[in-house]
Amino acid sequence: MGNKTEEKRSSSRSNHLLQKIRDFTLSIVEDVSHGYSPAIYIYRFRNYCTDISGNCYCSHDSVKGLEILTLQRDCHARRLDVLLRVLLIVQQLLQENRHGSKRDIYYMHPSVFREQSVVDRAINDICILFKCSRHNLNVVSVAKGLVMGWLRFSEGDRLFNCINQPDNAHSIPVHVEDVKDVVSIAEYILVVEKESVFQRLANDCFCKTNRCIVITGRGYPDIPTRRFLRLLIEELQLPAYCLVDCDPYGFDILTTYRFGSMQMAYDAKILRLPEIKWIGVFPSDADKYKIPQHCLLPMTPEDKMKTEAILNRCYLKRVVPEWRVEVELMLEKGVKFEIEALSVHSLNFLSQEYLPSKIQGLSPLPHV
Image (cartoon, rainbow, N blue to C red; front, side):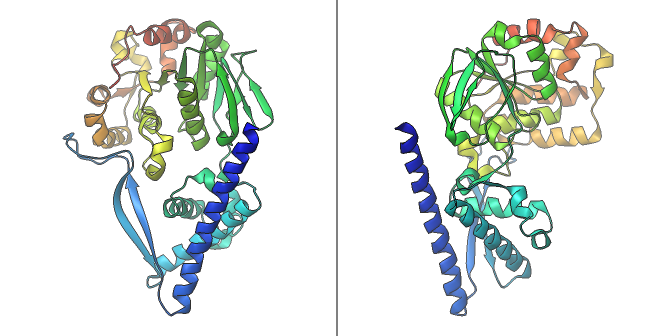
């Protein structure tokens, strides 16, 4: 009964979106037929500014400007051509109740699109125009994230029972909207930046010992990973912790989970995870855990430039000032190190010493 109700809701959402697409294209056709140049209004969003005073009023989905596309400019005419071609494909996907990837869409007109980023931009523009998320368009990405731990759920007709073998990895579902019957006896969720660390914890039977759920986005997290993590946090009401490398890219991945990405700021309300807490590795951990000098790597000029840009994000001053202190320390010391550097003490130091002490509250930064 529940699945049928959800199917009806999904069908209703698709029909509503299809009607909006028809109205949009009809208005363009009418403008052109009457000799007018259609004007397409696309709002631009941001999830932070560079006012480091902490006195800004940015929200997670602030409108930062308005772009107007018309046929009077050649570059705009090409963008409208691309947008309408992509919109036609989206309409077909919705009508046939099928799904396609951004890459699928690119290869339908490669000579017109020329490069993938053109399609990506058009999809983002469509989401903004119709006030929807990418999955509402039936445009999906192949999920690269992994999950293990004390968790059971279903996706459509498939049952994922991680509880029987909590340290075995499972792929995160692509169609997160189809995930149902989420059950867990875990005490917390741990997000780790890299697959190598995920596998280290699996080999150490970390989940079995600690009754938790571990997720990795294998680098910068994709949309299914972020949506799935949000679903687990909301459904299970569990605390979520994040472990990343002590370098500007690790920290940028952390902020992608916590605040969302600038590229998809228009959809930050469903992708950001304000509940997530950073538990390491901190720049200050180098001294605290006596990381040898030969395990510390000098920051490159590119690292320093990226770190300085991150420090200019307003939310570091306004929302998580304690994170800013640590990032400033990394820049001041001019060194970085990976999570795996903790293995200098022992191979299982991360799973048996470092993480338990952090999660038990002996040394994590306070969450604001």
